[in-house]
Length: 247
Length: 287
Image (cartoon, rainbow over all chains, first blue to last red; front, side, top):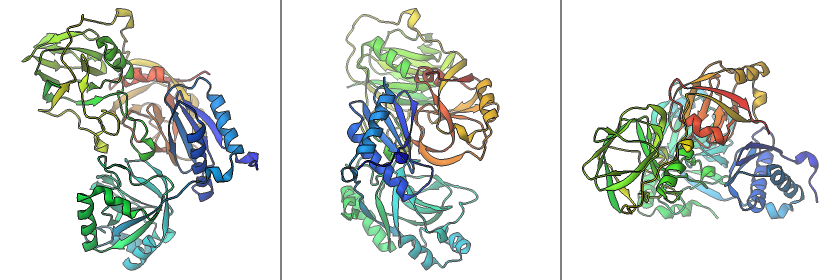
């Protein structure tokens, strides 16, 4: 069955080698499902010069190896495939990942800021943060850094007035109404509430990037002892990170 | 594998770069690669190298290299006042280097970025399919003192080659460049957009991540913050200060500020050669 016309994304030529398709302007699951499905269509139908896709909350940007001589024809082709695509063909697969997070005092440097801002106890913060499934909407800012939706609204806490010069990789934080995990050491202004022993990005690993857009994350609280155990195991067997993928 | 250079002084910023690393933008890894891809390509062309051979990219100068083996090489791109044992050497033309000599880059005379490459190319480790150094992503290291750079093979003693005069790029410090329009133009005040296309901006500083511009500030209807989405090499981002930033080869793959356009590829390599104080004006690309 054809999809109604108003669901067509807005298409734009943004450079010699790039097209942008926009599916609205809000962070919501419905928009994001369209983004995911459109990515699949692009991968299948954008021809020999297709290079790569960068999805975001609401857009799909397509890059090509060569300058497109007929960009409008490419747009027409992709939009037509979108209109006539069969639902089941484009059903995206979502992986479920279980991310161990240690909320121990040793790592949760800004827990006091979060509890005093939210009026929640430490236990409540942990159970709200861990008791929830997060969608990886996109990856960027740093290699492997996930943009996650959606933080429980009661956990929202303003960023630090002054960012730290260095936040270590694996750090889990809350920044405003967002939560995320730093994939590399870098400066950062989020409230630090824990740390995962998993390396989200390891260039020498077979799969350098642990996350991909569309992944469903669950944070599983672990003790400091378990944290060190997992760290040690992964340091000697980096590929074992696979066991945190639920299916 | 021939040891070719030993770094005596690392200078402002030097790094191995090739055509870039594609396929990983969706994971947050920028393409990187030679900033002035035109000079990069010409350099490899002069030497008869594989077009993808990596080159040493140098910003502004301050670099000193000890020659470890006899070889033949070329310098393309900016004129950074290159000297071999104190004697000036030309750009765009092959020349011989001999063990024990010192190749130095003193200061920028024209442009800001030069490429150094030996005949046959450098031998350089590939990470995620490219030799382009991107230190922030733990992909290679910029030039450091005592680092050794290797040539892929010995020189083959072919004829000297150079570029004919008419093909040598000129790096103007006053440019007018074409822009692909951005999807965020409705975020800007219409008057402010008109002013933008009539104003001249000056380069305030920059690196492989971005060049900061200074001039007539842009005004927004409702702030610059947008839902983050893809950006690319040449995208002009405008944060809330209203002062534009040109995103360069190592810039992050997505951005959360409104953009005003993307610099046309034919102009981008000229823009990367601007130094602090260089001037640039923009016009909309006619299609």
